[in-house]
Length: 181
Image (cartoon, rainbow, N blue to C red; front, side, top):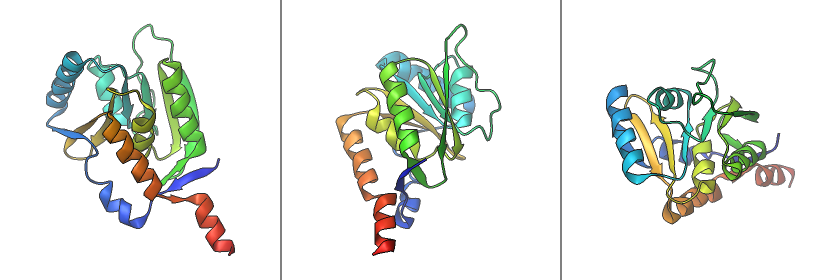
């Protein structure tokens, strides 16, 4: 496992703000609004990041092509009935994005096959990677604690914003070089 990026203390507060459109409400309200969005906008791919939002989407018959979970809230991630689903396990420690996680997301999105990525560690920051590699027009969905769900509609602007966030994150390699100098 190689850490590619590490969150900076300054970014910790920044990442508490929604990266996309916040849909507030109960499970039923947020899922009904999400279903309307998917029906009206027809995204090429839906990606979910997080156990609870992933389970809720599946229960509401919105089946993300890619689901990224850490398994802390879910033991068995539901799958679309009759679907052939790949399960990939990666290590991604808290506050980091690993090369392994980046490669798994990139590969899953390229294959366009239902995939569950199960993260040992933390999956939250992988929203950035999903936005960076998902096709334009895709939705990346994650939970906003105590508020609802956040839907990021992948656009050139959101991809640039994701890349900028990664550029601002401390590269683990840079940190190691600074320590040895």
